[in-house]
Image 1 (cartoon, rainbow, N blue to C red):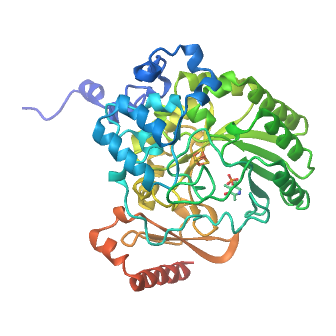
Image 2 (tube, helix red, strand yellow; image 1 turned 90 degrees about the horizontal axis):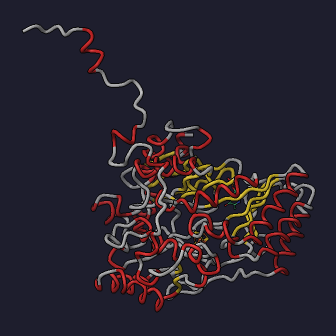
Image 3 (spheres, rainbow, N blue to C red; image 1 turned 30 degrees about the horizontal axis):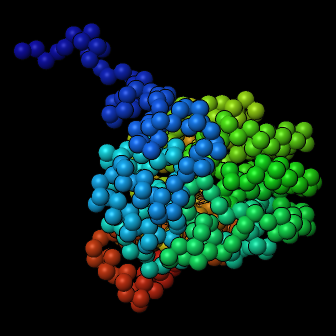
Length: 467
Ligand SMILES: *Cc1c(COP(=O)(O)O)cnc(C)c1O
Ligand code: SF4
């Protein structure tokens, strides 16, 4: 038997140098899955929406009116699509959660009701009691310290040249993992909220502050969600800010495109208000952008594409801020598909956030280690400007840090330590991996207050020594 193979065989057996699409070889997704967006009347599978026409479904007013809000409506809808045991699990979860429930017919219909427990969309919006894990002992409600850095109610000024302006406290949906569960939504069994209502008088105090601070060039208009702002206020706030000389950039934050893309197609007043503010900005050479929040590739459908096309034609830049969540998007294939699909609809992946340390949603957090590994997998699959930076918003007000930039990270205790020289020099900020990502033994150790102090002090000392 000859060991030599003819050269032609070697060539034809060799794997192609560059596979046309690495998804094809490493997952069950079809090639170019990111280009295939759902385009059927998917909502008709839900009994309550079985007669709803496309025209109705695309109508923002219809979506708002049929949003599922609060316990009774939720249970009524769930009983049509899910087994009793699951419905009971949600009912119980609802009372234990820091956020109330609100979900649009669009998202409700995209949930795979044959597998609601694992479904990545269900996980984000509907709590189930059996999956809730105990909070990490180091966790606080306003973990980012947004209220501490707020000189005026609803205006957080933490970074040198930019500020976060929370104009209202409602959203078209309520996400279980919301960082601002201290303010957003109505009070729940577990949280009494701060109020940040639509209130032009409160906004006036914020405008005064911004005018008096010439270093402020960049304003984030958020909430809550600017989708819930009447068009008139989108316009007024935008114009007011652009009229301040030193304001160079504004962005509206809205989850609308991800949870109710039809708003962009049929709420003409709102889109025109945004487009007018954008145009005013253009004339003054100031950027007006929209920041949104897709977390899973299945949230992007043909309806989304049409909505994003409209904004693209207006010249409005849309960027995405995604939250890394266990069981939702913490595997490389999902994150790659999300990244490519966002690019496909001209939404620029901007940030992937390490999940904040928020009360009552430990089941959704991942370790820093998981985040680091995901970033490594995703970087390189597409244009660098369409690849998100992975960040952690340092608990205690350190601000956003590149997740890789820790001074110290102990994978056993789950403690990572960050510094923020441009924001709060000389301070150390710790992030804590969720207990469920640690060994049984380590989970026990965290229950002991003396051990806690010892582990934290050791981590800070090691970080100091590393610098
Ligand atoms: C996120 C954030 C901003 C904006 O930060 P970018 O990194 O520019 O997106 C501004 N202020 C606060 C308090 C923030 O949390
Ligand atoms: S849309 Fe944003 S602000 Fe509103 S609940 Fe979700 S994460 Fe919180």
